[in-house]
Every structure is written in structure tokens, then in C-alpha cells.
Image 1: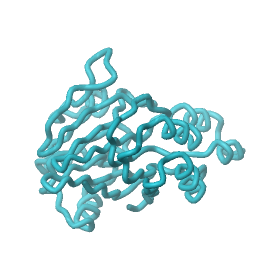
Image 2: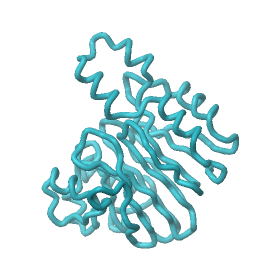
Image 3: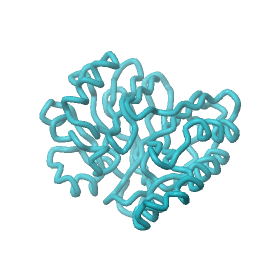
Length: 242
């Protein structure tokens, strides 16, 4: 399985996953024109996509969902995200009411399991993906925490948004913005505590998503994560521009 970041920031998020048989897009938070350029730059085409998964309605994750539908690419999202976007034509992919995890859905050669995340959106979700090659990927962005263990993971793409030490020094940042960040995004210490609890003996690589421009430290984040995961796990920061 290949995980290919095309963009990972509040300016726009998009990622490709390829299991050797089908290619999925996760997030479409850039213009359709820009998305086409990014996808072609990675060696693919929009017409080849088996589908697009959207985690929530914020524009840096969902911007061109309608253009993808017009291009014939199925777009999958939760019921709440569909309502927030007015996304008629999208395919509901979400846990049932009162449940944290939904039933697997087949998209091309993939099996996709949605799970609830913790963000200030209508019904945000993450995705557990099983590819035709047998690899397993968990994807979770824009979430303050997680409570799933994901046994047998080979790849993990997860939010590492801010460091509270830096955030606390942002004296010019409005207090409501600081509160929102703390309540809806994952702090590096929270991430490291979570990773320390996971069974990562089969994991090859962890991708750090959505680092804050103002409140993160890329080198420190990589070093902190390396300290709390097994030595075979590679730690990669997904860059703002892919």
C-alpha cells in the first residue's frame, strides 16, 4: 500500500492511497483544478479514482466534493457532513446512531471502516482502510483525541497539529481561537500518549498530518514520536504542499 500526501494544512488537505488495484482520494480540500494538477503530479488521474473519502465539512477538507461528483468520482462522507454541505449525490459512510464504528464498505478493491473522531464539525469521521494487498491504514485528522487501538496496522496517518508550549506563547492569538485549537485538534503530547498505547509491532510508517504553521515544530514532533513507537517505525511529516 502507498500513502501519498498531496497537501496537509489548513490551506488544503488531499491524500492518495494505492493498494495496487484501486486508488482512493482522502479529502478534497483544494480547488478541482489544483487537485487535478496534484493528482497528475503524483502519476495518477482523477478519472482513475475509485472514490473520495471526506472526513468532515470544513472547506480545507471538502472544497471540491461537488466537482468530483460531476467528474464521475463517488464521494463518501457521514450523514452529518452530507447535511452540512448539502451534498446531494454523495454516498453516506458513517456509524449508525449511537455507535462509534460503522460497517465496512467496499470501494473498488478497498474495504473502508468509518469511525467517529472529535472535532467541531457536524459528524466528523476517520477511516480504517484495508487494501487488496492486505495492508491496513488508519487515517484520522482534525481530531482532539482517539480511542481506538487498531490492531495490525501497517500505516498510520494521524493529526499532530500543535505543541501547547508554543500555543501558550501566542499572546496575539484571540482566546477563542486558542480554545478552539485545544478543543478540536490534537496536541503532540496527546498524540505521543496515544501512540504509546497502540500495538504497533506491524507498523512500518506513521505520517504526521496537519501541522500548524504557527504552533508546531517539525523536528521536535518527529523526535517526540520516534521516542514512543517501536524502532522499525518510520516517522514522516506530511508537508503543506505535498
